[in-house]
Length: 172
Image (cartoon, rainbow, N blue to C red; front, top):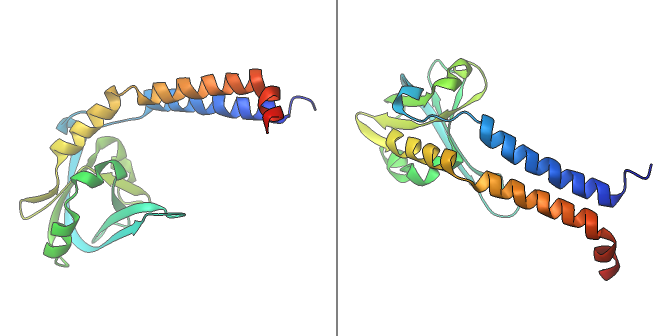
């Protein structure tokens, strides 16, 4: 099968990747205002803040667990710069009442074993993660052209690999 050569596979992979970036940017659901969020109230049973950065790490994984919910409530990686982790750990008391907000489109995941992204966290009126900052970040990401640029660059590289594969291969 002449079609399954390195030239075709690499080119098709990059073009497929570019299509993914472009389509995913268009169909991704994002909260655009506080109307797109719902509030949950509960009692904190535990939390887990893992910083697995570095080589072969999984990045940062921040979860909060509430009594009566099997759901893991996760601070999204895009929001970590807005999350006051040190203040949360310092003030954490088991069985504290917490107010969380989550995107409305993830409401069906509450009560399941799925992860749900948090858009705000507050305990006794003190905000550890602000919904104003997270919504602002979502609006910025929605209006960003970075996915389109990444998609266009991937297409261009895929086409260049297809056209000049023999020359590139000979130079190595």
